[in-house]
Length: 323
Image 1: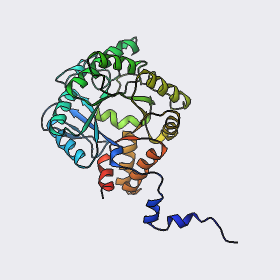
Image 2 (image 1 turned 30 degrees about the vertical axis):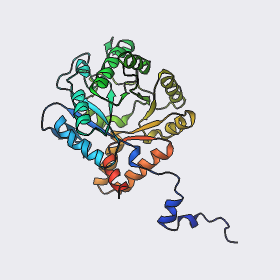
Image 3 (image 1 turned 135 degrees about the horizontal axis):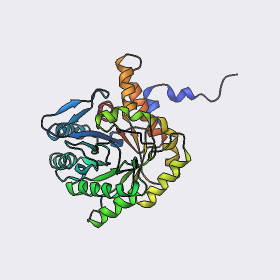
Image 4 (image 1 turned 180 degrees about the horizontal axis):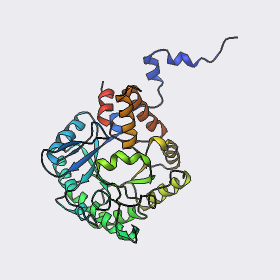
C-alpha cells in the first residue's frame, strides 16, 4: 500500500517550494539598530558584536545611506553620550548625540524612517533606566524624564519614539507629553513585553549601559511568565501604543505568537544582541552555516507573528533577499 498523500510533491524543487511558501521575509520587515556616539571620525567596533559599531554622526550617515540603499526602511537610534549623571540629563539635550543624529539622517537620507529608543540607561552613571530612590528605580519620577526625552527626539525630527524602560504608565505619559507639544502625529512603538534576559549582554557593551549595582528584574519581566505578557501589551495599547514589541525574540517566539493572536495591532520583535552574537561566534568557528542560520532565525520570528523585526542582521539579510 503506497501513500495517497505525498507532501514531497510540493517540495520537489525551489520553484514549487517558493510558490507554496507560507511565510516570506522582506527587507520591509527590518529595522536596523545604530549606536550614535560623540566625536568625529569615530567608528569603534563592538567586540562582542562583530560588524556592529559605535559611530559618530559623520560616520553613521554612511551607515544610514547603505541601509537605505539596501531597501531597509528604518533605523532605531541608541545614544552614547559624552557625559553621564545621576539623572541622565544629556538624554534630553537638544544638541545630544541622538538629537544630532536624527537631524543629520533626516537631512542626508530623508526617506529613511528614524525611530529612537527612549530610555535612561545609556545616560545615567548608574546604568539603570530611571531615577534611583532607596536603591531601586523610582517609577513615577522617571516618567517625567522619559517624556522630556521623547519630546526632544520629536523636536529633532524623529518619525517614531520607542520607550524601552518598562516603567508602569510610560506610554500614557509620553503620549500626553507629545500631544501637548504638538506631536500628536508621532507614533509610539512600545517595548511592551520586555523580559529580564541574559541575551542582552553584548548590547550593554555596545550602549555602555551595564548596571553599576543590582539588576533590572524589578522592572523587566520574569522570563517564566507567559500570560503576564498579554496583560502588559493590553495596558500599553490602552495607553496609546501604536506598535507593540516583544523582546527578546528567539527565546520568546511563544510570546510573539500569543501577542499576534490576541491583538489586531502591528507587532515588532527585537532579535537582540545575544542572539546575533551566538550566530556570529558559531559561524566564525565553523560550527554552523552562518547565513542559513541567520535566515532561518529571522524567518522563525516572522513565522511566529512579528510584522517588524529589529535586527543587527538587517543589512546582511537584505543583501541575500535582494539577490
